Length: 81
Image 1 (spheres, rainbow, N blue to C red):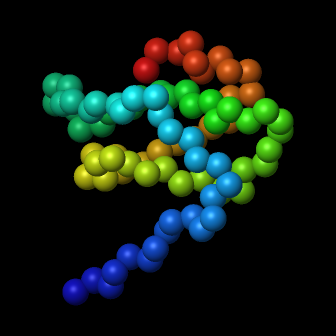
Image 2: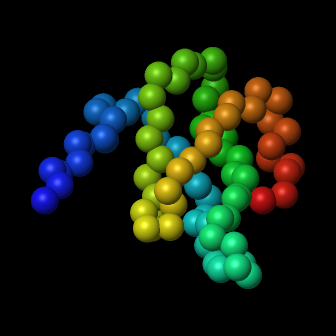
């Protein structure tokens, strides 16, 4: 048998940001991939440095990877999903 995967939880987070509502993933034709753009404002009042980020998926059998970018202009809030 395979060994248990390591614990990847980040210890002692200083900030937690939650999405306003969950994203529903539904089958779209014959494609196995679904890409969705989300904009999440962490609400920082001053400049901060991020040295770690953990994404917690509601359904880990569906979400298999995440691409994260910093949007310094806040333009992504107006982009379609």
